[in-house]
Image (cartoon, rainbow, N blue to C red; front, side):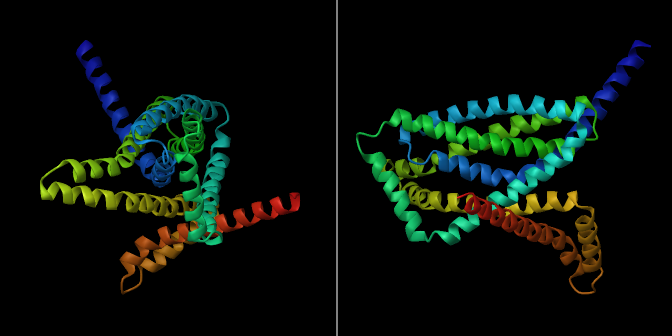
Length: 308
């Protein structure tokens, strides 16, 4: 009898872990769109800090991020337990914010020419080079800014994850939210630490190694570091439109059904239908995300002008 009970318990645990694994994969896929932007923003936050202080600053932001998760995960569980009807509105707000933030970045690039952006960046670096600059205060400001940014992005990740496991029981929700929160935090800041040190590694290889291939690798890393930052920024922005647009599309039944029917129609085409049917929902989600972002940025800009 005891053996049967033990086997039943093991079976229940295996089933729970299998369900958790599936839901974690779904939640990770849904939140992946935020990560590119999270990586780029956090890596940019460290820009301007002295090389020997980059990792301590990343560590300080990592600790702040863990504290953010300790606040957000219980808050999400309380919402799921007591006011579950709030999950969909929160998801919609998160999706709208992603679209708004993505379009704001694009609009900033359009409205501020590259020479103006470069001039502003050089001015900041020149100010940092002056001996009178209080580096301790500068670092604290960087850390606080990065933790604030992390709180917003973490709230988006937790909200999207909560939406993915809304129908699960409390135990599964706790496990999935905890796994996503811990994995995302360690993964993001581990990658940020590696990204901000790519140029240092390249410089060390180029200056301190005698082998030609090591010097060539160092030069490659030095050249790749800024391109990687730019790629992460662009990929993150695209992902924000795709994920945000997808959330908004699922929130409005009319849009959701229209995308489904469009994909089915595209898949039925005799030439290239399968590929087009698979790509069309993603493209339409991106278009919805761009349109929503444009409307939100336009509305906020108009409100600011009216307020002034």
